[in-house]
Length: 226
Image (cartoon, rainbow, N blue to C red; front, side, top):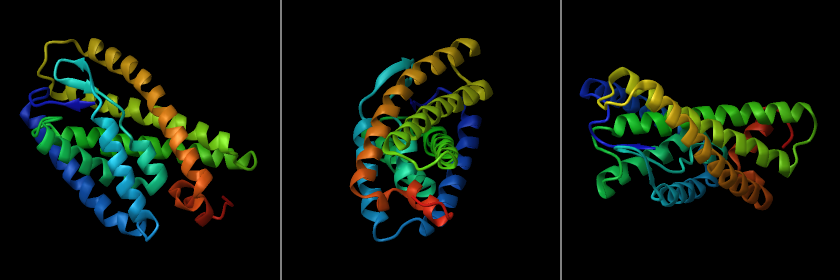
């Protein structure tokens, strides 16, 4: 979801702007270990794809729109740190050039989608793949299922990040229970759609070039055959 200016108070926006800057700086340093000659072109394609799908928005609450996030997809394909940077770059471009998301809300949007969404989605994917490995060889169907669940969890967690921010300094008149319930239900539905797109994309890339999928390369480096 994209938040516009004025949804949360200025102090809360400032706090999450600081969090976003710190998180992006940390990811910039750590992404150097993820990027190589194979991952750099893929990261550009991932950012372009996410930019395109995020431009399709529909309203959820006044000043808040819903759309596909792409955090889990980016993290699975190019790694969590590079994936977070891809999402952050997309959000900055959308905010400054297309007025999609407020400038003062950029910190909260980056925190929700580039940090919380990516972290929750990638963590779910790693856990799911680890459990699947223990049960035997991972099939294409299993990889797709893991990607689907990761995208769904990442989407819902990003939405709950907004609920936390609204709790701390929401400027609207809606009750917290109403906002939380509506955000959860709508983003479960969005997460299902995002899960399908993520699963299909990851399976397609893994079928053609499994060496490009960061999640599978991570398993190999950890000593688990991919």
